[in-house]
Amino acid sequence: MIIEPRMRGFICTTSHPKGCEQNVKNQIEYIKSKGPIAGAKKVLVIGASTGFGLASRITSAFGSDASTIGVFFEKAPSEGKTASPGWYNSAAFENEAHKAGLYAKSVNGDAFSNEIKKQTLNLIKADLGQVDLVIYSLASPVRMHPVTGVLHRSVLKPIGSTFTNKTVDFHSGKVSEISIEPCSGDDIENTVAVMGGEDWGMWIDALKAENLLAPGATTVAYSYIGPSLTEAVYRKGTIGRAKDHLEATAFSITDSLADIEGKAFVSVNKALVTQASSAIPVIPLYISLLYKIMKEEGIHEGCIEQIQRLYQERLYTGNEVPVDEKGRIRIDDLEMRPDVQEKVAKLWVEAVTENLSEIGDLEGYRKDFYNLFGFDVEGVDYKADTNEVVNIESIV
Image 1 (cartoon, rainbow, N blue to C red):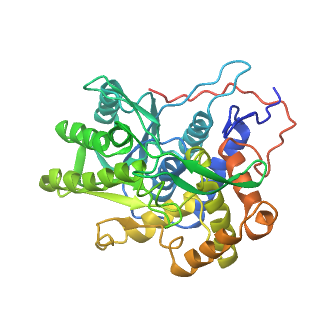
Image 2: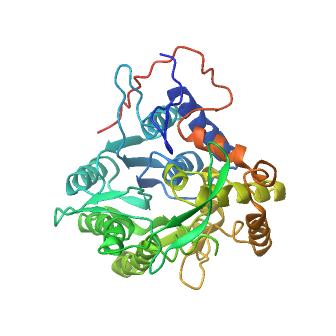
Image 3: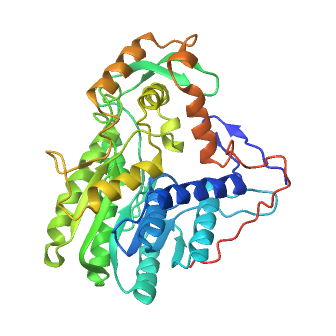
């Protein structure tokens, strides 16, 4: 079939297998070009099919020759209907890993559930024995609690008062003002239940109980802080409370791993175009301005560049992992450089519909968004008849 992007609001309802495959190949080639990383050899990535999780799996496999198990929750294709992009990404990754002689298997299902945890633990036990790195990169708006059975839904809202600021519709380029009402009721508790650290802790507890963590094992979860421009709705809002909980969980996990000399870290990463960030008011405008400045400065990074630098310059240097005053790894250091943030703040004041294409990188934002779904990728013939049914042979 001829596969074209179909938009519904801020979501693309189709994805292109060849575009996703090329994206994965491009990331693999980048990792190969940067040389070997003396990293972990047996890696579990929870949330492995897109974004930072996918980049982590690629970096582990093609930077450190690691065996990888990926856990994700993706929609398989059927005749006439494309899969979710994460499905095609994972199919492409596993195909390339197997061609390179690397072990790679996947578990597709709800990572919050006890069933998927058990299935994954059994796979590790049977095939790898133990893992020495666990990446936690889940990004879900809802979580069915495996103990209580309660369905929690996260919200992105300010706390205490209405938030009003600029935003942009990245499809049309229209800059407008938007207001977000403050959270109420159980919004904070629900958001923490979904996006906080409880499930990360459950995964590590389950792995440790079965003796599946190697001595000195490391686990890393991903977070974001961002600038003062967005803090009222992000870091000081409901999601910020969840991130606070996630970061506190790193310390409790480290304590629980003391007997095997294991450690848990939260890595604070850079703002990037994702399916989630595209739907967050204010963020698309901030990212379009940020991209413009960072590209001009020659310091722009995507997911794969971020994770390669995290591994090479933070986790696996042979020295103690550098952290900030709150114990976090800061791989957002280039984004948060004072000179970069000063320029973003200045452009923010100036930004209107008429000048955004000049002072911001809206075109780069759009391209990255379409790339998420395998569209607008260089080297792909989008007019060609494409088989939408792609299997992942090593799904357990």
